[in-house]
Length: 452
Figure (cartoon, rainbow, N blue to C red):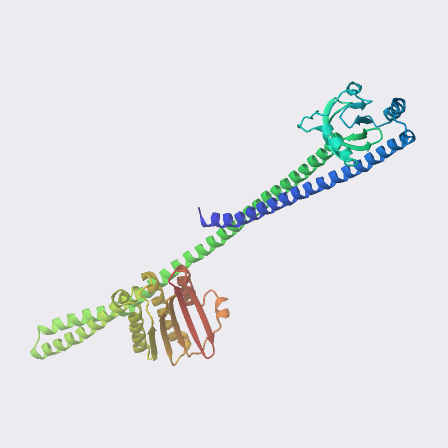
């Protein structure tokens, strides 16, 4: 996986994970809220049903109150009370029923086939003893009881909420009930609606996640394209500078060879030819030939020194032989000898962990800095310091010259080529270059971490 792809992946992954966490939290909270809302609605429904049942039973008890409180317990009086209760109804499936305390059905207007039967041991589809629970509730003074019963209009067993009261003088249990299937349907509709709302919320979050990921991806792609263009432009500029640097180095080398070595060699050639001519003459001429040859040998030594200088500038072999710190000390001594400027060199710590490329870059930066000082600084004192620590190596080259304006140099592409070369060398190996300049002097610091 390329670096750009890794960056995009690392940008999208936390976003997707955050949205997934948000979706999970929203889903959990929505489900919890839906459950609480359903429970609240169910409780409100049941509370209204309970109040309604109590009202119906109170009306039924009032309708037979005259007969019940008459003190008569004969069959005719009880049959009249049953007839009155049987005639009372509400809704499609609302009716009253009467059982004795032994579980015998005495009156059931919607299921007359149950009348006269003992239902004490009857169980509903869940295995609950329906009549025994109702009789126990009535024996405790009356109240609400939830059970399963066949709904007359559908002939299907559904949940029912019953309310029963005891009629102790006659040994009856009278009550009524409301079927809860409509409540269950209403709650099911609410549950379906809530699930739909949660699903829509999850879809919205998924859509936002997809759009966000696409936005990040397209932004990353656009950034990559932009960065690629900038990188290509920088690469072209760097390639152009490399070509220019090569041409400048070739031109400098050509000048050194032509103006120095070539002229000396021509002079040496002429002197050797003249010496050879004198050797064939008189003894006095022979002595002059020997003086010419001695002068020629001195010039050859200068040619050899010039060759060493050019070779040293092309590739500082001293780095390979004695290391960075001694090489910089030799460079400072050589610069002081050639320029006449006093150079103070100090080295502290170890630089052995630096790779060969980094050593070469620091040496070249020291060369370039000293060259700039010689050409432009008008300095009276130069200090070169090499410091090695546990984290990296720092090279510092400072002078007490006139200084310059770095911003002004940066605005002119034809100026500051040496500074740009130093910066590009440091960028190429992952180091950093710092430049401080004022009328009291200039300091160049190059730092390389061991991890780069």
